[in-house]
Image (cartoon, rainbow, N blue to C red; front, side, top):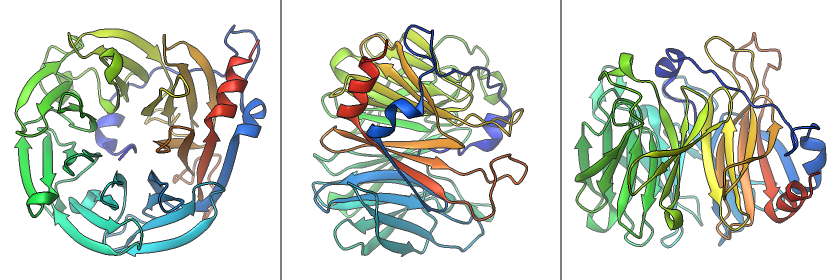
Length: 385
């Protein structure tokens, strides 16, 4: 679930960096007008969060929660993956945020964050098949869930929980949805990445060891990565909050967005060391690699506790050396990224501001879904002066 979930944690952190929109040589502005031919935008969903591509159905599924009021439903919106037309809307009894997909078995997993559970939806019919409770009761609610990753070979589902101790759940549908719970998985355990080649799960957050590495079958913690910047345990001493991850297994790299510093960190997965740091922007959030296009995309929300009126954008980096290709302003708050199954199309949700004081606030404003043709976009980017 690639949204700015741990608000209390993030607002306690200083978000420092922002990237303007420049051409590669730094001389001339480069932004939306140049890429208009590669982009399609639809404003049609309130409370949009994550998305997954369902090519077998010709659809894009978008999880949405229009209201945070207790007891209100969530939705799974199915859009035409080619032109983003609304096809149908499925109401779910619990609010919908994160999405995971098992295309092999035709399942969409919906993270019901505030209820600490997963809704399992049949991708073809939209039928709600079952709800898997993960989080324990906590006060008037439940332990929260955040990101979802799916091992489509085995069908196992990995889910993170960003508490102060951190939890990783491993769900095995082939064993009647057996749930394995790994506690003390790391401060603010938020971001997830799965490497099928090594059968490893990467779980990121804060603390001294910001990224934990777990065996996907046993749940055993096998190693940890650290920037070395945090020397005191606990949230007060944490310098970073790695909120989302993207894996480059071919080069033993792990990309992590830091919601604290607004930067992208690149770790070597063999040594666990940081090999590159790239400024992104205030509220750096989601990251995705597109090896077919040779690009990396990173969203930043642009707003923080100290700058609530800010707006964000989409940063495009070269996948080889992480040099800046473009930084595209996308008001108000770019959120979640999803790559089409064939690697040729990128999808993105952009959230309208919720705060009435925000200069772009509109009563009843809708969130946007964007579609990028990556062949066209890559051509435009590489033809810059």
